[in-house]
Image (cartoon, rainbow, N blue to C red):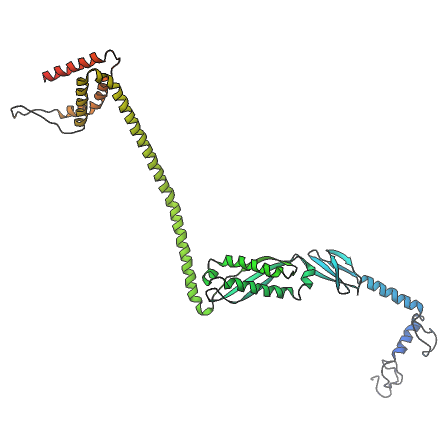
Length: 383
């Protein structure tokens, strides 16, 4: 049977007798019941009726204050992580910073805002921009920065990331506007990245936003989809040009050492030929210097000897044989093999003859020349 049905004399959940619908009990009655159970700790009389006067006793008030003080003191402990720095606000004004570790602050008086100063934050930037040669290109860039001054990072701007985004867009548009599309898509990408980083640092330096730019990554730029195929062909041609240049440089590097070696070899050969001719001329001068005393002593004999040696040297290198037969057509036997042997032995005989012409002493040069002349004259008479 339900508690609220007629005839149910049990108490309802609210303590009403007879099942009358009187609603929940009064809060003052509940408080008085608790006060009776705790022996009048919170004021009033422990054994009186519910109509007795209320209010907190002095002991209860002190206990409440002590409990509130404990809760307030415990709530003031906080921890700053190793990579963070805490900015302390006292009644809304910055009063200092705290480092990593366990700290305590007066609750409702100080507020601590932790800021990560070691994490590298990333901010992307992209958009269609106009180049120097009036072409539209889509440019994407990623800026990485790190907080170094937490106080300025929190309060120099309402939204530092938004301010950095606007500054990046401004710097990027300025640099792209002074760059041709060909450089932007091919060889000038690194220059654009460096110039954008410089311009970005100039812009944010005046605002003192509390962070530093770590790196600027320039992502590959691309033209609009309508002309993308043509620009792909242009980039492929540019890459082919660079490849041909590298191949030509490699070929030049392989040929140049060979050419330098040949030049060096020719130089050495020229120097050797020069030294050879110089030494040969010096030897000729020395030989004629030694022959000079003999020529001065017997000019006719020496002149004849030099003439014969010259004729012998000239005709000695000729492979033809001249035969003169006076007054007849008689067949003659020519020992050609013996003649050729003599022809090969002529240089050795000539050197021996030169040694014989050189006078040993100055006093005997005249007599030697005369004897040589007489031998030549007698030989010609026999012929």
